[in-house]
Image 1 (cartoon, rainbow, N blue to C red):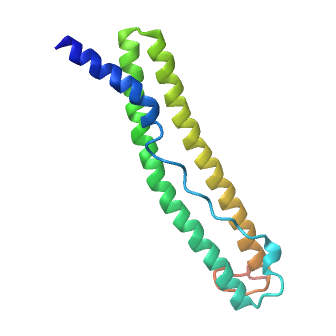
Image 2: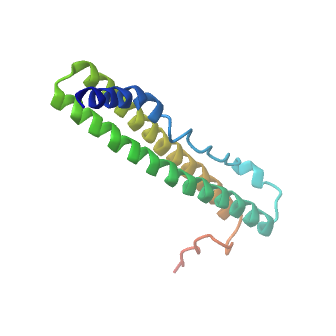
Image 3: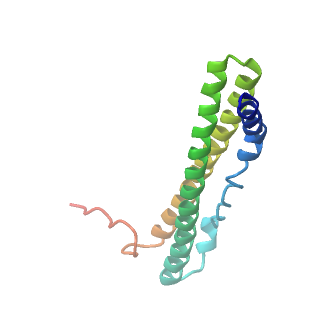
Length: 146
């Protein structure tokens, strides 16, 4: 019985790096066109262009949510393995578990950085569209002047 428990533990530790890849690769962020790509477009065409970009951003964010959910589940398993290694006092397993958990956290942090940059780039494009004129669909109304 003890042999099978130890064997199972060894298999789990050996599988940990493979499990770290179980979420696959992060979704690919869509390219956000430059504001200059709006040059020469009629307001209606520019609006459609910006909405198409927004749809791509939203689709990316949806897939990113699924991917991050997987990373969170993976992180929970890795932190459990870390706590088990700490309880056992096995410094080698502790170091490996810490490295694996940190790797998952780093991947998640990278997705956050990418999403933040995507939001910034989309905001720049949207602001350029809104600067094309007043009363454009999807743009804030100009403040009233007195």
